[in-house]
Length: 132
Image (cartoon, rainbow, N blue to C red; front, side):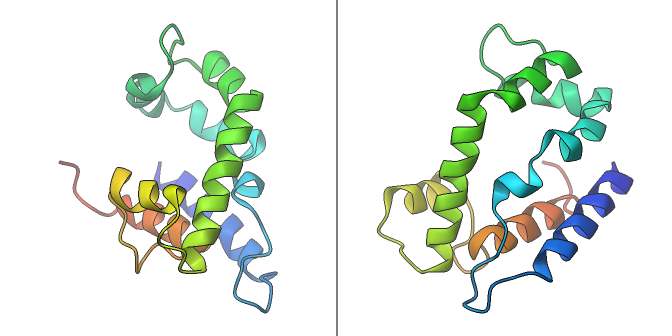
């Protein structure tokens, strides 16, 4: 798991070098959440079993089923919507419904969640926090 998180950090660091000068990231969340990047994670049985409660009813927590979900148009649309919300968080549009979901629905800190890079940093730092 730690190796996979380190891989993700390396990927993100590479994308960050191509950031736009206006402060918005030059990459999108969909650039990170590719099947190629996610596939090694799906080979970890512990991670797969932890996903079961987040999957739609009737979807098994196995690599093939989760892979189909990740390749689906619905998942890609959800990632795009999430990307839009993260970008809006970077522009301080705190009145937007997507932004309110990010801050309250997911319990994210408004100051820490600044765009895609801020969100990814939060996720990467979560691996160091004790599980509750």
